[in-house]
Amino acid sequence: MSQTAGARMTLREVVSEIEQRMAEPTAKGLALAVSRAVREQVLRSGDRLPPIRDVARELTLSPTTVSSAWGLLTRAGTLRTEGRRGTVVAGASTPRDGRYQRALEHQTELTLDLSTGVPDEALLPGLARALAAVTTAGTPRSYLDDPVLPELAEVLVGSWPYPPPAIAVVDGAMDALDLVIRVGLRFGDRVVVEHPAFPPLLDLLEAAGVEVVGVPLDEGGMVPDALAEALGGGPQAVFLQPRAQNPTGVSMTPGRARALAALIGASEAVVVEDDSTYGIAGTADVSLGTTLPGRTVHVRSFSKSYGPDLRLAALSGPEDLVGEVRRLRQLGQGWSSRLLQRVLHHLLTDDESRAEVAAARAEYARRRRAFVAALTARRVPVGGTDGINVWVPVADQAAALVRLASRGIGVAPGGPFAVLPEETDHVRVTVGLLEHDLEQVADEIAGAALAGGWGARGR
Image 1 (spheres, rainbow, N blue to C red):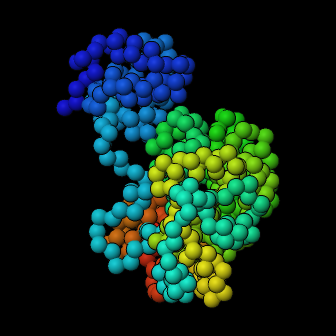
Image 2: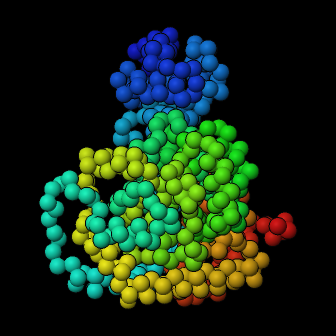
Image 3: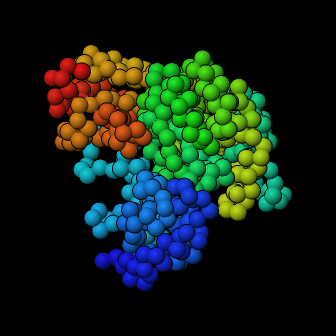
């Protein structure tokens, strides 16, 4: 049973401690004040907070403002709700059921798991030549040496979709996004994301305590009118995937990129792009950095094309932001393995490796086209054009998951990807893993999609 804060302090005392730490009468100001009280151990793990209306009355705030502050703190893991028992201060070790975990966990054994979002191992380029070329781990002259190998930096800059102001190499795309969030955002900031969005990104943003605003997608990318409305709220950043968007497979058109850049250019927001399918995407590089080079962070992952265990991604951005990322890394891992950087450099420049990646790109495109055509023939139309995932609309998400699991097939539920409340039910299918039995699997996916009356409603 959680202890109430009132067992140690009266309502007035609790509110007084919060009020002393509150710089402004807003949801962000209140959330920051409560966060400071928790950090200073004035409010402790397990303490129950007074009801929202009581706090609002004592602080002369609206209940909506207090509720918004509690929401920020809950997403950041500072508070947790316990139903009718109210809201309590969460412990530092309180487990959080993240969106990413909910997207991938399964309750039953599967014979075909298409939920993972990982590439087909058989389509990754071989490492024998690259490893043979790396004869030593190497030793830096100093622990403050440039963390990016010069020869790799040259290749990256030469292949970037626009001239990058500064470039860094980090331990994968999620490491890049985490670093950008840590140096660029503060508790209570507002950011714009795609709807649907990648669950690990949403987990990172919610853990940082920022307010997330969703903007829907169409076949060209973020919808401009919806983005314009979201920008009216003064966000600090806009996060997007320029091509093969996960989960939808939508790739932004050059025209749409220019339209979005014009809207964002009139705001103060920074663009953060996650190009997670470099090498295997069928569409050409597109980036808002072409128009907004000084306001764009572009992240390029090599996991899908060269292997998740390579653990490398590159990011470009304004020199001050990339400098902050490098300084932050100096307090931890310092740099990404130069040995792995040499392996990546070989893979990016070796003709045979490049041919293997090109063959994988063609095979992924073939699998996606064939699967989408098979679903369409079974009255299940899907959007998107690129990547290894397909975003399948279903009549009843829970029913579809259960039906597929009973047949040994795993797919990812759409719920963890959703940002806006009006999202219709979907599942994500990693069709890039589907080498055999495509027609049979399409039959099962279509049957699950239509289960629950979707077809009967004439959708």
